[in-house]
Length: 228
Image 1 (cartoon, rainbow, N blue to C red):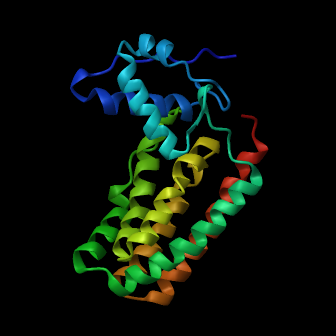
Image 2 (tube, rainbow, N blue to C red):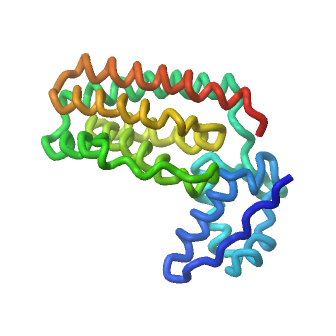
């Protein structure tokens, strides 16, 4: 079995965020594997920090759904989604995000429309990653999440946006499997959604988002055929 990459030293100026980002990467790369118990003192020693920023990071990771806390047992890394949980999550995404796209087409300000189009533009796409490590793919995940969140925000319904954010879909999906070879297809689908929103085409935006998420679900199902 390949040895995990060494944990990098952290910059003290942004310590809390650095600890959170490093621990997120360790979970996404399965260095901290599903079901592993998180030893706070051991992690703090490896990261060369006190236990406080590690505990703060764990609280954020619990909110993200990446770790679970049990009374008297501490934190453990959350299990991967089952196939049924994955399907249920996409059902919710299709329901919520299709509505968000429709409302964004109807309600978005001119600045919001411009931002959505800019996020979907080819020049906004990051360079193709050169490894399978989570850190190499983080830019793709960040851009994908930002595009969907911008649409949810433009929909003008805070409760709807909160519901989408709380799914933490991008973290769970990318932790399971992400078909980066098809990133260009995803980008094309994003541009179709953005064009419909920019044109104020509510029906077109809703359909484009539903089609995108339906196709994305099929692409990501490959994760269940891979060993973890």
